[in-house]
Image (tube, rainbow, N blue to C red):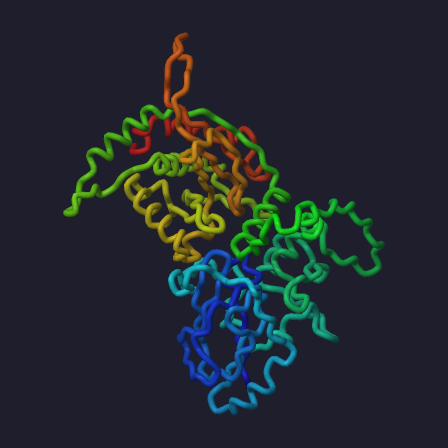
Length: 460
């Protein structure tokens, strides 16, 4: 019997992917562990491994195809002993291949920033099944809302768990996944009353007033003279950033706390530490600390001092984290990504500095592995190097906080009744009010201020 190879879900947020390249062609034999294709997600390009042995009977989705839905059949494998032509002729007739998009998938060579899906083992329980886990069953046999004449509801394992934690009957949720399958975003919508079917015998609920629609593409373009602009199509990363940040602002009640921090002692300590750094054979210092390295360390320690703020909100209960895993926003072509310094409270400043330099370089080359940027308990966004005095940042779930860091600059302050010059840095803490109340947020940013103003306390 032919084996369908499906578009894999390579991250918890992935709904579509671009089939960047086939590494096998029709008629090629494959064995378990062979790399058969490269899939471009919103953050990186990943290699997909075969888990079964056989012959590629048919490539359903050609390379260069964009926006292929997760769990769509992309190829058919004829198992050992099976007639390849028969498998190709009879396979996936219900799943026609999408037309290749005219938009280029990426400027860079896919092979220059490839990672493997297996790089994030800790996410196995959080994300949709890997292609190998469901590859032997055609989509049409396992992705419907409810099988005819059956009480079985088709939903992803993550959606079932989320529905159970939220106390929602999953049979009442309208699925939006492939063939009507209930997926995680459907459960999120159901929590706020969207996408719920009416219970049998229950009166129809009154529809909530719809939000005014945004302007259509045609309406926006009509405001500008033809030929005065060019259309730059969104890539996967830009679409994902837009979706996640819009969802964050719509579903997370943000509030903001701002403090000014005197970083005079920090700058002195930084200069002294960098000056004493040992030099290698090439004459270069072993490390060169930045202000951001101190910020990461201070925030990590502040979360340990105020553990009730080191949390993530879920409908079923608060996740109270033992370690401070600090994500750091890194700008890259087409968007940004937040690699994570794990257990930052336990690491030296020089270690944090070294990890950040490595992360930043690989992020810009799209070489980060999923486990290096997924998760985390908080984040830092620093625009000080651009001269920005202060700003507010959008929380990136599952974080409950994010610290926006402005530029350190000389300002006039009053000390003991006298006006003096001091190096001051403004920071703004964005908090998820469901998880972190005002007083708790104030304690956290206060703990950060105490540490950043007295960096010697970071080594105690």
